[in-house]
Image (cartoon, rainbow, N blue to C red; front, side):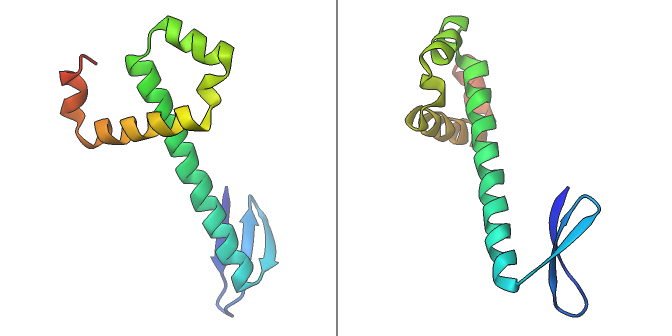
Length: 98
């Protein structure tokens, strides 16, 4: 587990497992921002995977893997936008035949 903690004296530390590393306030802000972005990116990729698994045929999945198109930022962006729309209204997925 990775986290940023603030001690009673106001100093910040990066805690990785059982080890603690001192850091400045600015460093802690940058790290928290990067961790948040990484989490969002991970969730976005998971959303894209759910859309492909829900609606994609075996042939589509194979084509995405073989061509590398499944790793294309444009393709992932499109799938994330579709996923966000569908997941905001779960009933819509059923209407589309999922």
